[in-house]
Image 1 (cartoon, helix red, strand yellow):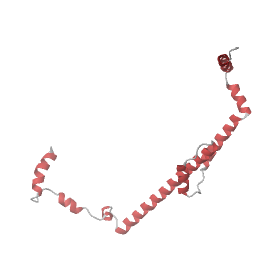
Image 2 (cartoon, helix red, strand yellow; image 1 turned 90 degrees about the horizontal axis):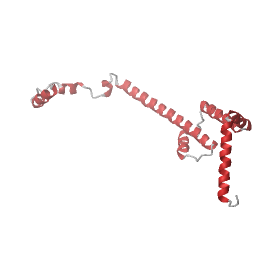
Image 3 (cartoon, one colour; image 1 turned 180 degrees about the horizontal axis):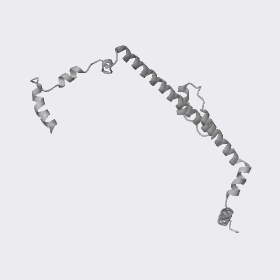
Image 4 (cartoon, helix red, strand yellow; image 1 turned 45 degrees about the vertical axis):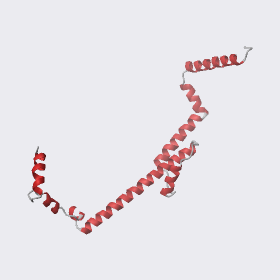
Length: 159
């Protein structure tokens, strides 16, 4: 309601110079951003330089982290023989080719590799057999045998 009264009374009175203190408020705000921040011109320029330097440092750190992750993805792609990604290669080149994979990630990859090697070994397969249910193994074997018999009967007219 107050807005409505102000807009009805305030707008016609602005032309007469009775419209309120809005013009004074505009005149009081300084046009210099340093004065608005409560600093001298030199302090404000130094502050702006610091902000720019900090932003550049953060951006460089971020780019380096992205390149580390890209390096790890490239290593994993090589390990599992997956197709290469140009995006990862471009990211590594942008960071300067001297990017190493972080030690924590390398430890995780090495642990996974040792676990996979254990599973792929003969001892790992034997341990997996011990953990499996014998009834389940028998069911799978009998299902495979009956499936092979039915396929052989379809193909061979003698059986």
